[in-house]
Length: 215
Image (tube, rainbow, N blue to C red; front, side, top):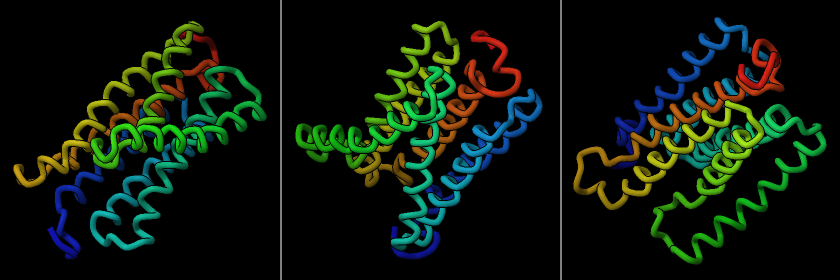
């Protein structure tokens, strides 16, 4: 470990998982005629997440840190808004309002967790609001008869494993050659790919998925 460009080679290289996920989902959605503006936006953000995380794990400057976290936040907000609009049929005013309200609510949630647990999660507490949103949205969609909810719950399950490995990275870093942070990248690529595919299967999405809840 150190300030060198390849100080974290495994953590840097595994960001390719985000790019692989973006290419694969793009190809599948294009084949199935489900590629449109919403999924295209998310695919662009997924690509930016991979590039930004690579920069952070190689250059590690302040602007690289911003390039790392900003696409993640934008993906979360864009996905939440699109899910409210397509999965739950809300108009853009309601979808936008809920999306904007998520920011202060997630910060309050994170602060509460840190007050109770301190640094026990190794800096991963900031991702718990997104996990909670996935669980609530997935369950709610299933209650409405939207089968895409299973994809959200599946993504939430993978996200639990991802957060766990990120949290264990600090304690295990000295005991293992590469730590466990690299699996955070790999599993999150799976999570984001599943989420984009789930959005394409929501009943309000343009294309084939708009034909019914069972699409």
